[in-house]
Amino acid sequence: MDTYKNKILIYIIMTYVLSWLIWSLSFLFHDVNISVFITLGTLMPTIVGLILYVKTYPMKFKTLISVNFKFSIKIKHYISIFLLPIAVITIAYAFMRLINLETPEVSYRWFELPIVFITILFLMGPSGEEFGWRGYLHPVLKEKYNLLHTSLIIGFIWSIWHLPLFFIEGALQYEFTKLYGIGLSLAGYLLYTMMLSLWIGVFFEKTKRSIVTPLILHTMANLSIGYLPLVFNKNGAMIQGLLMFMFTMFILMSNIKLLTKKP
Image (cartoon, rainbow, N blue to C red; front, side):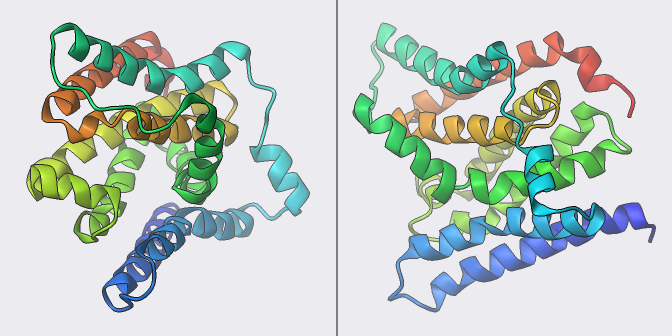
């Protein structure tokens, strides 16, 4: 097996094994809060990514931070990554109200949103995942694949990584399993994650591969789902999914040259 494939497979295997092992402990230690295992498991993509990144590109910690955490992003990109997920959920909610469909109550008051944002960023996925998926795996895949293929491959890997959570009571994904059944839940989650991965991939490249971009976009995607939980309403989930597909097609067509450019 060549070195290139090794870099990809080692990352995927290490991340899956460590995350899945930690999550599986929740079945053995019932006295421990389930969120402890879920949170620890979600740290593995970034931890493994950091280890392999430093091994592949030896550098001082300060250099690693300056190379990957660039805040000098164009205002239009900041606006996009903050507002795109909110736009989808807001339009879906407004449409449901317009046609008199049942809608959920908002989960947070407006002044709670900054605290919720920080909590999600550091404890509910983005910080524990994005340096792995985007910081390490994205550049490796881009050596041989265009951005479209890279984003879809990461989306698939990212989605399947969540698989055990569909069977762990207390995880968000488990709620989908209870509501929609395992087959539909997995299919819907796969499509959602691959579309979100395409969004993140495009803006990651547009912002010169600053990890700040996927951190914000991933956090806002999770926050929007929590703020207006339309995904737990069958009509809401369908409308939100269709809107996200439309937004994805717009992003794809607007950035077709970037997405299909040869590596």
